[in-house]
Length: 51
Image (cartoon, rainbow, N blue to C red; front, side):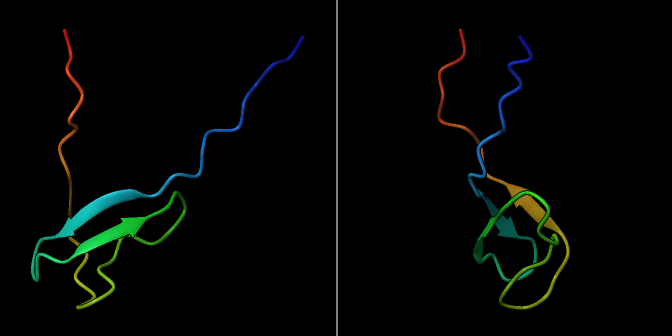
């Protein structure tokens, strides 16, 4: 009866706050830009229509 599903390991796209490079970060990955090493990342907006 225990039907816990594993969440999908889909990488999210974040934009670096310093160099504006787009990074794909998976869960449990360090939050750090792969180009410059900056630690401030911004999540992209969703394109879903919320009613």
